[in-house]
Image (cartoon, rainbow over all chains, first blue to last red; front, side):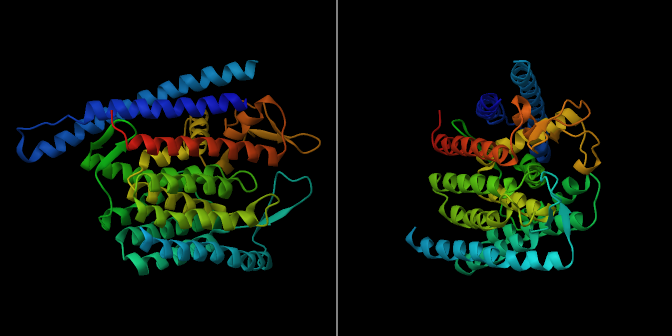
Length: 76
Length: 330
C-alpha cells in the first residue's frame, strides 16, 4: 500500500502542474473589453466559472485515479 | 541578505524556547484542572491533557513580534492576527464541541485580516507555466485557503505526534521554497512556524504528554495558509501539504459531506489483540489516510506515524522541486 500512496501523491503533483498549465494558458490571455465598468466583473466571473470547472474536472480525475490505484491495491 | 540573519536567528530561538519552556507548565496546569482525554490507541487507560494551543500561539506571537520590531511589515501583523483568530476558534471548539460546519465557516473570519491589511497579491503562480492575474477570484482563494489549511492539519491530528511532526516537515519545506524563490523576508517570517512545531513535537511525540487540540492544529494550519498567501506560494504550499490533503479528500469523498469526526458512527480503524492498528471493513466508516496505510496489514501507531512522515518528506521534496520549476517558464 505504501508504494501506491507515493504513486498517488506523485499523480496529484503531476495533475497540479498540468492543471496549472491549462489554467495559465486558458485564463492568462482571457480579457473582455467593451463593457466599461463591467469589464473587471465580467472577466472575473468568466475566469471564476472556468476555474471552478477545471477544479471539478481535477477532482473527478483524482477520484477515478484513487479508485483505480487503491481498489487494485486492496484486491491484491 | 546578511541584515536578515540576526532577526531570523533571534525569532527562531524565541519561537522554539517559548514553546519548549511553556508547554511543561501548561501540561501541569491542564492536569490540575483535569482537562484530559483518553488516548484511544493505548492499551492501558492513558489520559492525555489538551489543548496545547496556548503554548503554540504564544510561541508564534512572541517570535513574530520580534520580527516585527526589525521589519515593521504588515505581513507579520496579518500572520499574528490570522493565527490568533484561528486559535480562538479552535479554543471554542476545544471547550464546547461545535458542529461540522463551525470550523470551516468560522475560519473564513481568520482570513479577513489578510484582506484588510492589503498584504495580498492578485497573481497565482504555477510551476513551469508562470502566473495568472485573477484580482477578484484571488479574494475567494484567500477566503478558502485559511479554512482549508486549518482543517487539513486538524484532520491529520489523529495519532501521537503526527500533526506537529507533519507540520515541521511541511513548514520547513515551504521555508526552503521561499528561499529558493529569493523571497527572503517571507522565508524568515515563515521559519518560526517550523521551530514552534519542533518544540511542541518534543511533548506531542509518542507517547504524547499533551495533544494540540483544535486550538493548536487550527493555529498551525492557519499560519501555514497565511504564509502561503503572503509569500505568493499557494500552489507550492498545497504540494507540501499533499498527504494531509489526500486525507481530507479521501474523507470527504467517502462521507460525501462535511461532518465532525466525533459524529461518525463507523470506525475506520480498530485494534488487534496486541493493540496494533488495523483497518476495518466497516462500509459506513470514512476512508482515511491511516485506513489506507493499514489496508495491507496491522501496524503499530509509531509505524503508521513514520509512514505519514515519509509521505510528508516526499511531498516536501516535490514542493522544493516545484519551487525550482516556478523560476523557470516554458
